[in-house]
Image (cartoon, rainbow, N blue to C red; front, side, top):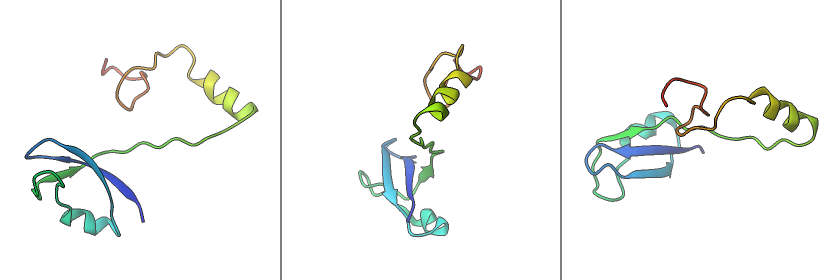
Length: 78
């Protein structure tokens, strides 16, 4: 079962929860205030690599700053 990140539209708490299916995400409640006004966040994940693949991945992004957010500094959001 996938884990999703949510943001409560009422109390603005960030939280994660395991959801059995994508349509079940519509029934998630905030654990802090109980509100059903929650928004699923875009989640990023990382894959562990080693050796030459890791070096190639690192060099691909050289020259870019590791800014905030999930963009890795490669967009104009900074």
